[in-house]
Image (cartoon, rainbow, N blue to C red; front, side, top):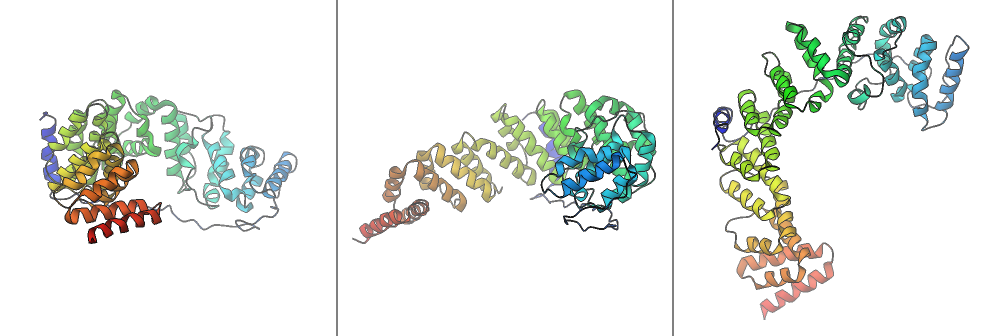
Length: 436
């Protein structure tokens, strides 16, 4: 046993008895804001009445009406809507409130991105900040697709000036979300600069910045050893329990690509419950690609319980891709030891074994002592039949007693799924011979 397994064993034994306890996390919903509607209801298709200052703004209003009258063309209005705000903020905001198309999330999202652009005018930013709640009241800020990658689409400012820009906005329930998006944009462009700025903060201010730093799935971009070491330090800091629970598993998976022993030790020191089980499973999967034997040794050195069960499943899942027989043997041994592989995994094991080696599949089905999983029986017999139909029929007919009856029925079901008449004729002929 490698030395790195020992600390993990102690942690596993402390956290687990017979099974892993699932942890349900509640997700907070965004605060509801009363929605003020203008002259048209959401989803309606009619001209939007907008008071403008004439000139260029009148042209924007005309273009918006054209877009509204032609379904499917709203993408054409996204860019000009943002430009409209530069010319006439009052008219642009009126359109945001009253236009059904603006409620499509297009204009609103692009307009908000204006907050983060390098060339944003300070007076315009202040005017927008005063209207944040009004913008968000049109539709839902938390729509799928807005936050994650939107900072990649614009020429975002980076550095302290961007953070200070958001800080200077009037107070709003939206302000914290905007601050997180600002940090996400900064990290995307210059993660080291954002990290250096963050490390100059103290106490609660630093905790707040760390939460923002890790928003929008940023840890997925941190892959080299130096970055991972820094992330590990942040997640392991007292007071960052929420970040640890949210990103600890991903961090361990990243560490396992280079050093599975270090990854296991860190997981054992910092994680518990289902997070620990998932993390160890990730190490097993990552290690399998380089060294399947070492991956299996990790599983074998774990005590019985939830962590081992999840890790064994991960190993068997990896094994099915090229070695269906080996996957069966490992899954069967784990189940005999009290671990549950689960119906879906048994389906995959049976399908892999039947397709990769129908001869071995037939042997396993006929000779294995004990009750095999029904999903495995079904998939292995079906895959073996369609791989070698005649050989599988002859094999089923040559068995004896209850095993013969069971296998004939399984072959019949596989065959009948595509050719019912032929399958019934075969089964009837077999039964007829039995009665003679």
